[in-house]
Amino acid sequence: MSEFSDPPEESSRERIRELASSMGDGKAYERWKDIVNQIRKLSRLPQADWIAQAPQLESETLVFLFRQTHRVEPAVAGSLLQELSKRTLRQARRKVKGLKPLQAEHVVLEVEENILLLLLSEEPSRQADFLEIAFAKSVEQRTLNAIEKLKTSTLLSRRGEFHPAYGDTDVTKFESQRPLLLAPDSRPDPLQVFLDAEKKERVRALIEEAKEAVKDPRHLEAVVLHYLQGWPIESKKGIPNLVSYFKVSAQQIRKWIATALNQMREALGLFEPDALEEVAND
Amino acid sequence: MTNSKMLYEDVLNEVMLAEDTPSHAALVRWTDRYPDYAEDLAKFFATWAMQEIQTREPEIDEQKIVERAVSRGLDILRRQGRLMEKAPVIEPLTPVDQAVLYAIYLLHGEADLVSVTKRVSEISEGRLLPGTTVSALSRLEDRGLIQSFRDRDDESEQEVRKYFSVTLSGERALAHAKEIAKVPGDLLGDLA
Image (cartoon, rainbow over the protein chains, first blue to last red):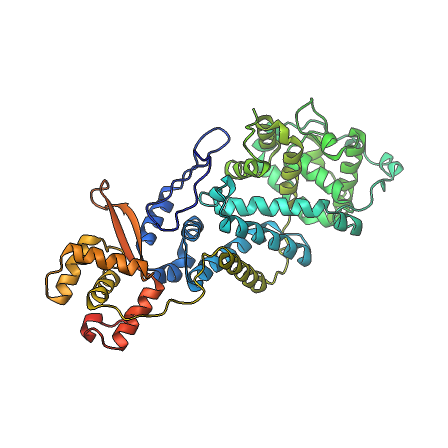
């Protein structure tokens, strides 16, 4: 038996096709009950109603209708495609914030293409089935993946869009900084960070406000991962940490973080102990 | 333990389904579950975390992107042979077929064999045999004027029935029938 949902038979549009895919733990993919009810209702209605109601339908319902439609008129297919494309774009837009317009457009186009190919694929796959249980999540995932690819693309790296030149750290500059900033805790307590939500939100707001002041994106990334997401600088083998992620020494990471904190403090006009420093104490 | 059948993209889908934020704790959980993808997962979580702090929404030409996606999608459907190149030529329908088609149109979502037969009998003021309805339904479906969907009965939730609905071509055929007055105008009501 196939691991994935079989493509629909040309001759029938009969019953709601079961999703045959399953999660890694073996749990079967299952549509939400409200989606199943909507599919049942729509499948009995004239195609003109599909077109009229498309903007109000759940995305997963649209995917179902689209995937199981054969020998369809362009007006029906075009209408469903248009609605799904708009939703893909809307969802992707939320994740491409901060990119330059051309980069954002590149990412969104790639995501649109990926979703389209899955929708139209005649080969059964877990990813195509996933569109029928969590369309928006699939778009989010694909958008983040496309951004990651863009970050590492040779072309943009050369242009310095995402990765300005390495090795620009002036070590002597840090020696004059307060020791506190030179030695952020290498193992923040994730539990404490999570429990102190208010403080975290304050720090997030400060980082959002001052992030443009950080000259090297890697420095900012180190700060965000360390302070907002709880990544340790170093850790025992097998636990993700900043040293293995950036492939530089712990000392280098600390310098990056100190640089970023200083640049942000300067941008915010903070000369007294502040929230950023408080976080560094954690 | 890594499930060897799980592609990286499949794992990411599950991540997105299960996690609201790209926290380190979540990353550890997924790395533990899929150690083969540890490095890729770290990069994905890092990208996600960085996008979370971004606030400036870039300008995007939405119309251009949507138009392009629709056009490309239709092209692929055409190549796959799933798209009707032209609307089917409207050929004359027999009075019975017209009445059945119109009954389905009127029943709007509730058109199974029994209700269609009943409705045709009502609007034609004569008794239609279910066998006649079955033949008409088969012809209409073959011509792409109706489509069918098998579903559980709303009341019994047990019995499976076949429901029929009118396609766009079917609506055009009805409009055409009214235009050429092959059936009495009042039979087709206020159909466009």
